[in-house]
Image 1 (tube, one colour):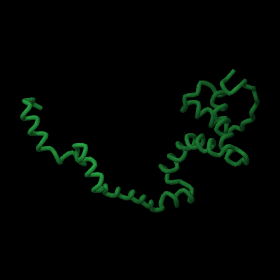
Image 2: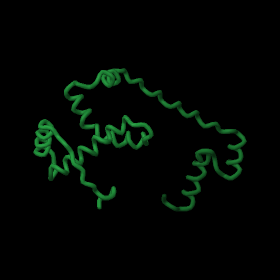
Image 3: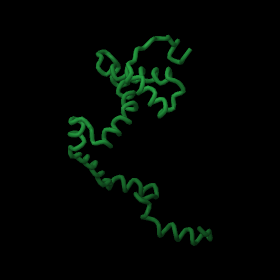
Length: 143
């Protein structure tokens, strides 16, 4: 039993062109058998058909289709064969996102500065560097 449930055998009718394409793909892709290749083709084809259906989880479908279609889009770009709609989107100038506003400078209220000073500290603790240096020098500790 597969993770998705039991596998059912179904028959499929292919024309000569599809049979030849299947053989070519078997030689080019890492599928171990014709059945494995055709099962994968059916899964991918059903995803594409699901895009036309109503009532499907469109977010999940978009996620699945994105990984499925990426090689196809790369081929279309390489061959300069994108559909006109996608070409127009690709050619449209990208508007840069505005930079976030700069943070306003901090506002230090005089009352807060005085409160910090009453605890023996300054805002950036730069106010008493000379006193600190003198106390360290007098103590004999070498920092």
